[in-house]
Image (cartoon, rainbow, N blue to C red; front, side, top):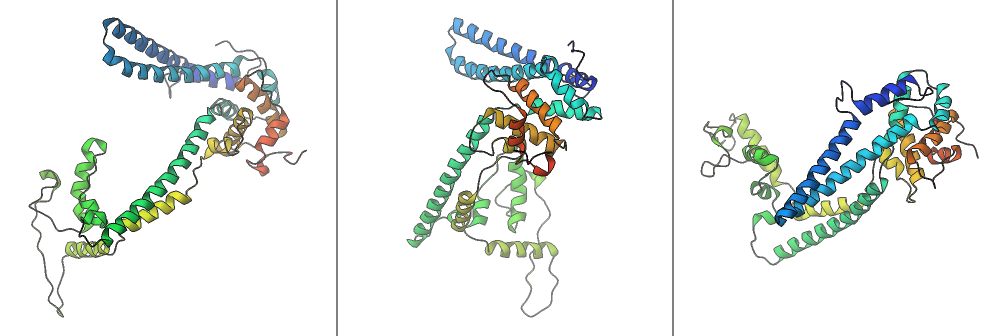
Length: 349
C-alpha cells in the first residue's frame, strides 16, 4: 500500500502489519479476505454442480454454508475497506495533524487506529440479543415456578414418586454428563460417588476399569460410648453424606432459579455496553461511545479537545455515510457519561 506523505510512520507500520501480516499474525487481512472469497466461490460452485446432477439432498446444507461464507466475506470486506480509508482517505490529513501535537510515542498512534476500526460493529445485533435474553429470562422464571408448584402438588397426593423429583443427590446420581465428546461422562461417573459421599457399588459398574479404584473399602462401625479411630476416608464420606442429607429439595432450587431469572438484568460490558447504554439507536452515537470506551478504558487516553476533534473526523471516515456528519460537539456529548474526569472541557455547553 502506498501511503500519503502525511500519514505518520507508526500508523503506516501498524496498518501494513494488519493488512499484510507480521510475525505474530502471519495471515494478514488482505489474505483473510481473499480466503473468504475463495471459500464462497467453492461453495457456489458446489451448489451449481449438485443442482446440475439433481443431488438436491445436499443443497440445503450448502445454501446454509453459502450464507455463512457470504457473511464472513462481508465482514472482511467492511474491515479491509475501513482500514484502507484510515490510511488513504484525504480527510485523515486533518486528524493526523491534530494528533501530532498530542501523541509522543508510537503506541499511542497504534492504539488510536486500533480503537478507530475496532469500534466499528453491528450494534443492532447486540441490542437484539439483549432483548431476546430479557424475553427468555422471564419465560425461565415462569417455567421454574410452574414446575416447582407441580412437584409440590404431586407430593401432596401422597403417592411415593421417584426420588429424582425431590432429591438433588439422587438427581445427580441418575444424571450423566455427555459433554466434551464423552470425556466428561467418564470423569463425572468416576467422581460422582466421591462428591455425594456414597459407598462404592461393586454391582453397578459406573466407570472404566482404569478410572475405578480396585482397593477394598473397609466399613468401620464405632460402638456407642467408645473411642475408636475412624478412617479419614470414611469420615469424609460420612460428612458428605450428612451434608447432602440437609440439602434443599428440587422444588426449592427451582424457586431459586425462578428468582434469579426474574431479578437478572441482561447487559453488555466494555465497548458494546458503552455503545448501547442508551435505548435510542444512533449509529453515530453508538460508534463514538464504543470508540471512546476503547480509548479511555482500554488504552488509558485522556481525551483532550484536539483528540476529540480528531475522533470526529475519524468517525466520519469510518462510518462513511453521506447522511452522517460528526462534529466535535457530537463527540463531547456522546462521551460525557463514559468518564467525566477523563474528558477535557466536558462541562462546555
